[in-house]
Image 1 (cartoon, rainbow, N blue to C red):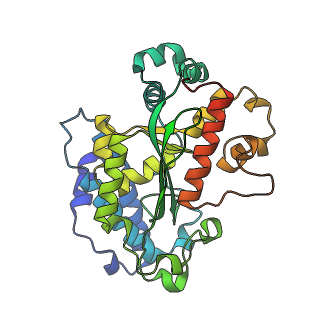
Image 2: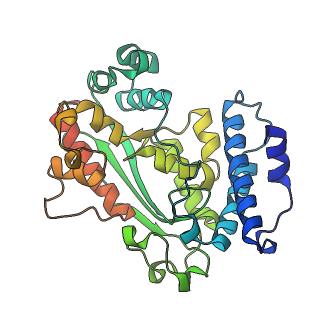
Length: 322
């Protein structure tokens, strides 16, 4: 599939419910996901203001693909690798996030970080951090944002300081199609969210008030997330205006996982189950989570844990401005 074919496919009038054959559904899903990848890459790579189509074309195709995946069944897709989830933020994103925390120019951070960001750990710690940021965590029904739904959002604001306190947080549940009332909420074994939490709730894509509030937040404050590539990938295909804000530089995701991996000098010598890949293991290491406690895997609770843990890490490395 080339770009012209991807555009044509995205603009086609296809009704997933009319595809009743398993082979036809699988073929359509594969075309959808290939087109989503091509369209996203081409749109992001085009010079700002010269994009060949609005990003709504991509979001709408992702909506269509989710509807199709509902018909295919989550159990059949569970082990099928997707392409819409980024594994990490780009080097440019990491440089921009450090510059945002330290209120300095990206070029200065880049000079310290060096080729391939080999000294990014030094760049993170050579200047103090300050200012207000938002923390965010989402729970979803799939690993891949073009196949599943955002069902829980946790958001909290904090002023980065030695004794900074997070403000009261915000949490929201978002609905999913009624067929899951009987099938059960996918990935409930991880997030423990059931139909009782979601029944009657407005879906994330249709919740205009929530979308507006999140977009305004992300365009006002840098946002922290542990493995921010996950939230970033999901918001790209689910939050109206997010891709546009990201490309224009108005939205800055900050990956706390990358920070703690690079600035903790003991990371490389830690046993695997103590490394900060997961928020839970990092929080235990910084003693913001007791040894017998577990990460809740619920938006607001995980945001609060992340913020307390990143503050402990920053304090440990003397990164706060006095």
